[in-house]
Length: 137
Length: 137
Length: 137
Image: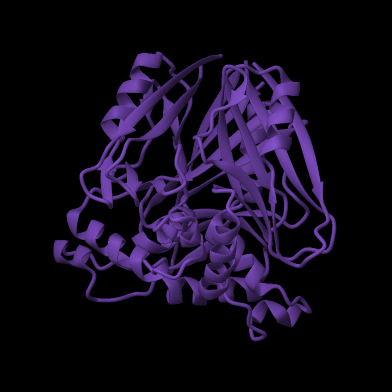
């Protein structure tokens, strides 16, 4: 069994942003040389998410609108008594989950035809990380 | 370390349907011969989900009603400007997640007494796939 | 490749409770001797969740309030016709997901600075379990 660990750094210009990760994850899997296994793609922050969905700009707007409806910004979160103002970002992270596991088959990401991996920044404009852990043979 | 990869195909008769996968996943794990490890069960589509919950018909109705409340059908999703009509299916997929990892212990799925694996089709009546990646020894 | 499987037992005093698992998961990873790999932390029940977020008491209140808003208690769930009264607990489990995978690097949980692992009990006051499956080398 082999493993490879890499960290992707982000510093988004907007507070909320989606970043398409598929090419970077594919490059790390290629570098690992692993032919059969899995890669874990996991946000290292509690105000960000990682998900797999469609690379379509209209859908991105739908997703942001939906996230804001289900886990809204609100000045009255109790978490804000610590001085933070990002309570909604924590809830959005719980809603979409902070990680995915992508299978690797014949040395490549085994994704469906429309599946792309996204990093979802819910409280950006600062340095944040995603860990990639490739495992297999 | 050994791995086994299999694909399960679905073509549901209804647009929305839950399919119990536990027996098929158990059969693939048995075929792999792996005694200790994990199996990733992951939808290869962006309008479907995979989750673990209870095999109870009343609950299924509750789940569908809840999904429709939290991620409703709506003709006005921006994604529909591409000609699609399944914006809600993308959001439902994000809501329940598109994958689970099931531990394998002593050659068997290490699930709790009431846990069953389900494929959740949110935009069916066409051929779709789930990938199973078994990893272990 | 090595694996280690352990079960954590819970019997919360309240019906709903968050239990911080990070120290117990770290101890199991240490015991495994695995330096590079992953640990799956997965609830074995359909009325509980496992998630990664911040260890902050104000946020806990926000999370509970949010869970109750998005997946509310309701005497009218169809699941209750079986004699159960915990329909909301099933939906809350779907909402936050029942498992996480934590990477292991250099023998330790490779979590971000604020990330902590939580067991979320949605229908407690009885014995329940979380399975830990460590895999790596």
